[in-house]
Picture 1 (cartoon, rainbow, N blue to C red):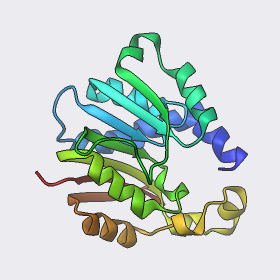
Picture 2 (tube, rainbow, N blue to C red):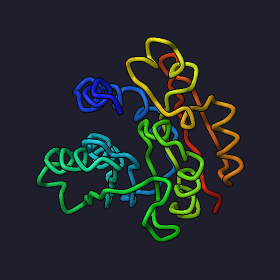
Picture 3 (cartoon, rainbow, N blue to C red):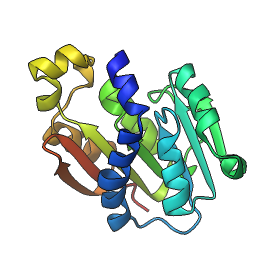
Picture 4 (cartoon, one colour):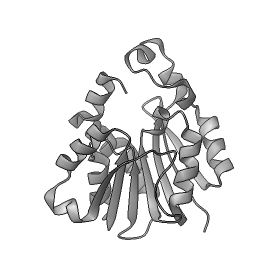
Amino acid sequence: MSGLEKWFINSPLRVRCQELGPTRFFLNRSKIKENPVCLEVGCGRGAGMRIILKEWNAAQVIGFDLDREQIELADRYIQPQDRPKTKLLVGNAAAMAFVDNKFDAVFDYGILHHIPAWKAALAEIYRALKPGGQFFFEEILKPILNKKLISWLLPHPEEGKFNTPEFTQRLHDTGFIDIQTDIWVGGYLLGIAQKPI
């Protein structure tokens, strides 16, 4: 991740974008029960975790990130009153260390396009979800990432880039059902998918 992108994802502007776009989309379509156990994949500084705690009244939110520095930022960002409900880990989305069927919901606030093995990460998300659990995702699509200025300022692995049909087909192939998507701000894919009961 470039320094510019890391600056943006750790900014108050990014938190506001998460609240106004993806989170509202997710809340309007959420079927998860009260007090869910949730996972945020690629939690960064923990802003998504705080949103999940507040908006879903989560019983527990586990956040993990491959970048230890981001986990240290998250550890400082999580409010003292929320600490009993949170857990932070360094981890790899393509090889998660969780038992099968653990989470009521998994959240991806824009991380899979950073992962060359994003298909393996989707399989891991599916495995970790309880039957009936929902996967909430926000992703930047290949057409935006391939624009000259964006690719120069914010380089991403070629293997991590996908368009809407590729991503939704992989969701289907992985076993997800009830897939709902929308495009936000011209290049962000917002969506929800469910693991069958």
